[in-house]
Image: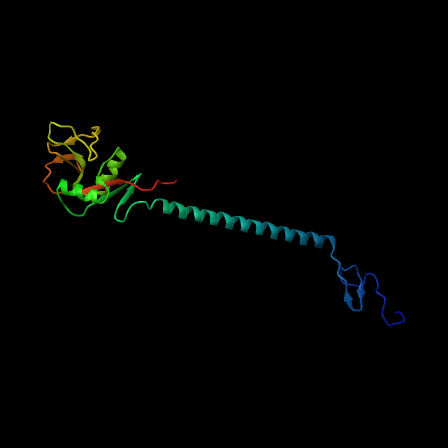
Length: 197
């Protein structure tokens, strides 16, 4: 004990890991090498987990934005029309003759349906249910060639049955009938937007 009544710290009397120094009843804690290694390891784990969380949240937010963009890309046809490829198709619920059906389609800035390949033909068959639908094929008589409503010649990829002047699509394929026979119809037009995939 010195003159002021303070006891001089003695080595080895303090708590373990403090270096044994006690000053006025309070211990000066010095961290051992083993404790520092554990502390740095904890800091390292926290940093790694923080980086992983940030990277994961960035990746998920980018993915969510991409999904929203793709959904908007496919909304290219007017209401009640169905998109397929670069075309929009309208399937009527009512029956009419070929001339009225074509006039209806033209009022919608479309034509009676035209298919350009087997995929489009199969699409039309799938959506028309069991009833037959007028399409854009027509001819002046059974001696004339088939033409689309835009006056381009039909390439005869698929056989057209019957001797009529107006084409229609049924479960049996493409057939023809007279222009005064009433049926449901399908309109088609090119989409106003290009798909971005």
